[in-house]
Length: 77
Image (cartoon, rainbow, N blue to C red; front, side, top):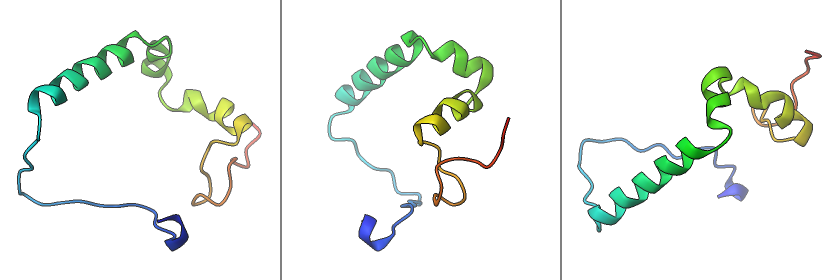
């Protein structure tokens, strides 16, 4: 998909999708929510949002900027 420069996949419609194992899905959701709630960064994300990541992400080169052509924003602060 990367060689075709695929940027996203959009799905829409009104047809309900059947889950193969509904109980397993619910268990996975519970586990995921527990991990998120118990993570040490969750309170900081609730307080500051995604912008908390920007400075650290730019230092790591992990911030998509200018339509994913750069990995930092041209700002000083």
